[in-house]
Image 1 (spheres, rainbow over the protein chains, first blue to last red):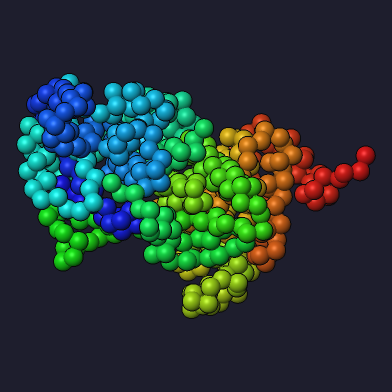
Image 2 (image 1 turned 60 degrees about the vertical axis):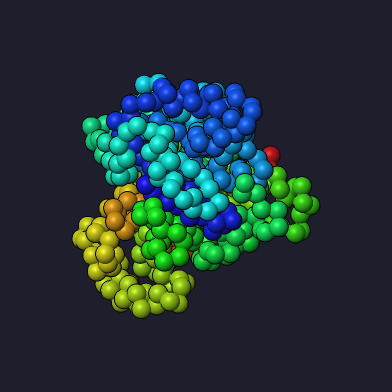
Length: 198
Length: 286
């Protein structure tokens, strides 16, 4: 698990963890959906329990990609300009190149087939036992972020960001490292400038 | 959860903690860190070793009090959006430019990748004169080795590696001019006009020796030969006014540019000759 501190956002603390070999993605997804539907007291406790952003790790090109989406989501929240209901769903929205919220959640959120997940928790202070609570929800193996680069599915990222025909990539054909660093740079920049994209 | 009605907006707080790098009439440039970082997971603020990740460069288009508030807000918003979009177009076209790291149009801040390196102006002889006093030691060295030695032989042996001049940057002046020509050509082929090409707006990255074009504050989209020719003319004048004996330097830039532009070169060359005769402003007579 990694922790980011933001003094400019009232000392917000953001915890991120990467999981591999996740076996209960479908259960997590239905739990989130149920929690959102259930309005009573039960709903509240359940919403608290799944109050995380669950992100498909295959679509994240680098830690900086994730950090940039988190940053823009924190900024929107602080300015009262969230486009989605919570800061956690806002992270998913920031990751997707279009403005369609449903599409963002479907693409970047947890799906029934997900086996590699990133879990993000935005907090005002360090929450006790957060790591245990993450592990309670997710059946899988927590791995360090250095492994992320091996999980990335570059072809889906290229498709979502419509990069296949870009001259930047044609130029470096064959050089995989160079191509990936260019894709990462474009994707990170797209997330950062989403608010002024149109 | 995080809304802060009493304290300053987050981006203002970020600027407060940032280091001012330079200050112009339009904007101020800062070096800052967006977040602090710990891998332990158990570290609670104090005590645990906090590491700041990569730095970013913040371009802060501050409020202009001589403009009406609503006009100022919309102009600032447009310019930040314009600069970010120009950078994105460049990136997608394979032009080496800094990546974008954060955008806050409400406060007028654009955060971009911090490029560790020096501007071409600082590297080339002559250009260092007006630079920071703090770098005077280095400047002197550049001067002695550069102006007296390397530049004097440019006409004859321009190909030789000027390692001592460029220091830790492993490239020759020839290769540097070549890279400049190629990057500008890639940018023009994507129909992006930089609008302010000078040797200060190009940097040589320390680790990779890439040539990075910076400051797209005046950039715009255009397919016109005129605009591309003027872009080159502006650079030619910048070379002539900052670097002594710059003709062979700029000729090196143009020849690399020509090679890269292929068939698009000829009309631009013709127009560049016209522009040289009349200056960058078109005559409004007739």
